[in-house]
Length: 290
Image 1 (cartoon, helix red, strand yellow):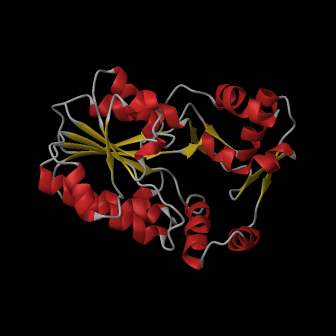
Image 2 (image 1 turned 90 degrees about the vertical axis):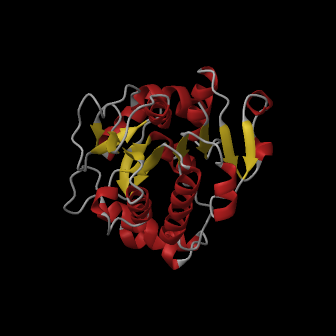
């Protein structure tokens, strides 16, 4: 079985790569800088230097592939939605040109709205482009990553869990490693066809206030959830050097996921994954806040 993996050094892609190697697969890894792979991983994979924005490079890198894990990574792109759409078009071109039989796409809760969810609109464009091919595809509609908390360690050390969402708004929170587990289960299963949507919701829905309480207990440091308003969020993002479309891509996500939105996929045994926020925070966050 020949499987290609994008973003193999990312939070989800690294788990996908790890499990495929353990399953006896020598995956093809598409990444811009193969030197970022650990020596232990590099010797067990086929690493191909590839930018997902380059159509020809993506097509060439996926020649002879049976299945594809497609996740799209931004790098301060000035127009995130347009970049996601470009990457999606490149994936579609490679799948069609190389006859790739199965694709697992890392999407997001909110993509079902198709419009009005900021950066997630770009993932929706990719879903649509893959759907039009008529090949076997599974869209993983994932919840809010636990690892997003790592992006604001300074404020967590000050006792603040900053969130653009209302602090009493429940939403699915999930460990990225669990998403990788779900992706690999689908990649290694052959014989399926058609279009599938599988939400990955984590163990339970949480409000930011509940998440802050869990983090406090797990790390031994008092943390309180504080909402960042849209105006403050725009200013913070602009002051950090982001352009207008980048700012609106971030702001639009929180607005689109709270205003008149209910996830299309209900929580069930199929969408629920095991790792709790408390367990993750104790293992990952606690040492970083010590």
